[in-house]
Length: 455
Image (cartoon, rainbow, N blue to C red; front, side, top):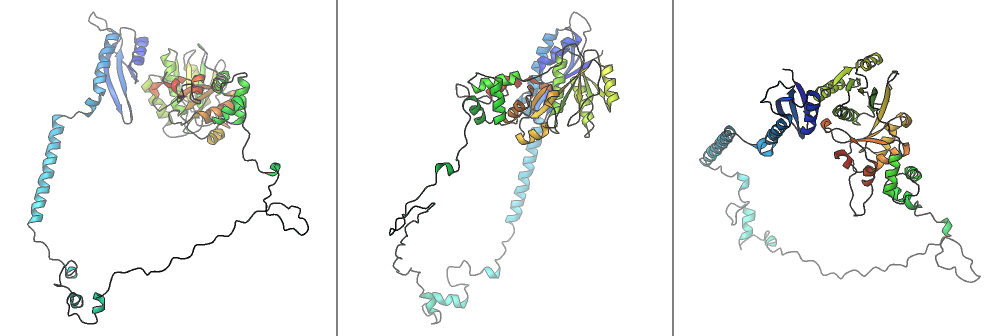
């Protein structure tokens, strides 16, 4: 009986894939929970087509049974439970420790206390026994005269000295910044003169009025604020203006039933590979043909990582060491498939293939500083990109720096990616949800701007 392996963290999504690929009468052969350090456990399901028979359970009933078993196996009580052997081992170790301590106490009590050293004598005595002769003589009335002054020493008393007189401060001098006409025979005036107001340095910067001022106060650059106001004329609410400007930005998505090459490009450590695998998983879940291409040879383990993702997600993986390998992978892929290519960091362009479109998405880490993001995005041309993917949104304190930079570049936000769990998939960005994470609502509450990730 041929079986197929499915891995994910959502039982509903796994059974949808099983029903679509193996039919509603599929049989669940084996299930298990894959525990991970620092992350939620994954679910592994082995399924096969139905072998027939009247006693076969439906896929829905199998799902209920598997879900209950996994919840019991992943419960905190089950993960922290101790067997009888574990309890006996703990009790034996505690009993051995107590016997060792008791034997040590008995051996220490039987030893004779060591006599104090000679230099210790006289340090704690309260009488003359054991004291040196010149110190013992001080405790007797018949002490010799040379030690008598030591006995007669009295406690120190401060001398009675009158306090010093108070300090007389001179008058504060005036600062003369200009010249005044002085009449003959009259002393110069001591009144302070002030320079003209036009000569004083400006202590504040002018604030843009209206929507632009609110955007600048929220953290947007003046250039981004001007772009938002120009994209949403007539709107007086800065949140609505930002949402309208993000909605008007250009975003391209692959067309149905047409072969497309999809790549997520960006700087090293920007989360481009994780975002690419999430897009591939959602594309496969939607029923579209999906192929992975391992083309990143810039670091060790890059290709092995893509092969591991492909095995876990149940997707076909091709290796591409050059342009010819990529053309061969596109040729072998089914017609109308989405070909997700894992590329090295930086800018990458595929060879021209007739009838195949290339969709470039830029990974923009929302938790990076604006200066670093600006320097990294300078290597890309926004006009040739299909959109941006905000990565690391769960680590960002605010999405304003990244949104400000994207508004200036006129590049739309296509997807949101948070965390490192590929099985959660990727989310399509909602412009007005992103805008709600920047400004306070009428109820004086704020959102984190990442609600679209779990919607």
